[in-house]
Amino acid sequence: MSRIFNFSAGPCTLPLPVLEEAQAEFVDFGGAGMSLIEMSHRSKQYDAVHNEAMSLVAELLGLPSNYKVLFIGGGATMQFGMIPMNFLPKGKAADYTVTGAWAKKAYEDACKVGDVKVIWDGKDENYLNLPDPASVQVNADAAYVHITSNETIGGIQWQSFPEAGNVPMICDMSSDFMSRRVPVEKFAMIYAGAQKNAGPAGVAIAIVREDMIERCPGDLPAYLNYPIHYKKDSLYNTPPVFPIYMVGKTMKWLKGLGGLEAAEKMAADRADLIYGAMAKSGGFYSCPVPVPCRSSMNIVFRMPTEELEKEFVAVALANGMSGLKGHRSVGGCRASVYNAMPVEGAQALANLMDEFAAKNG
Ligand SMILES: *Cc1c(COP(=O)(O)O)cnc(C)c1O
Image 1: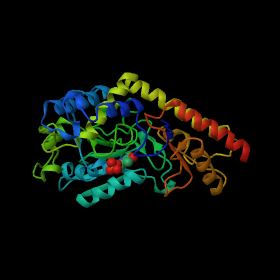
Image 2: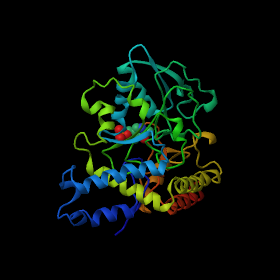
Image 3: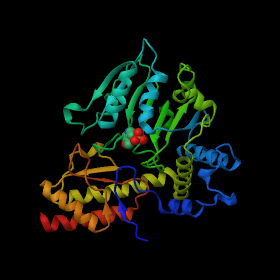
Image 4: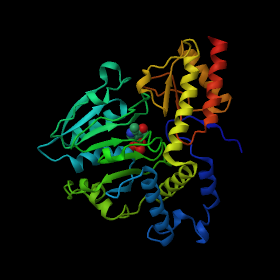
């Protein structure tokens, strides 16, 4: 077996023990004589998988009892639409911070549903910077305020969050979910597509505070309706059983490592190695993102020419490191270093960066 270091932004690397466990029990799940994906979602076996995944997410985040973990198909993008459909009534407006490509998509979907106000826009700085959280003014009468904790494409991340007072704050944590401790009580809702830090594609994890459910109109089509998912424990219809099972395994793996505190430490170690390689390259590598808002998950870097960047990506691949090409909208290179990326992977990349700069600088 030859596994390489996969720096892809998503879907992305998953913990090897999780993959191996899933492989070992794939054909015959727990002596049932069938795989998990062949059995009823109303079976005793699946129920245990479902509930364990839900409770591990809650346990790792330290969720108070008035929050519930939901599993919803359609990825984070589905949530972009469901959030305003459920929480943005006529006569009210929602506040959005537009911090990059993902926040913009969330904002654009909300605009199709109701009144939206942009309370911060990173356009003038090319979405490479974030405001001081204390300077963000949320409108006191907003239906909710939406923020994006980590911009996967731009490589920027809120280090702390704005204050929203009594306005419910909703956060897209798709690309840094479970990578650090978060003050969950600050949020009325947290959501994330699973395929960055939590499992494979095919499910979004939505963590919703109880009182938010009372705000929903309740007459939306069933699947778009949070109260239905909430009341039915995400089992109103057939849930994406395989992704949920993998989320459960990934959470169990993370718990075994020491939970969010350990995740945060590993994230800092990986980021220090890669940003450190940039810093000591004497200007060969440059990071377009100012230090205070650099992401620990998606690390963007440039080189003196596009030819060098292309060559670096090829040399990295030849050395067992894939997925380093930057997003097509920003160019350059991007190393996505989620929870499942071992610190050794970041070390290997930093070493290669040193060598490449020494040779080409
Ligand atoms: C990947 C990503 C999304 C989109 O997730 P899908 O599951 O593909 O819909 C949304 N927000 C952020 C921050 C992301 O990184």
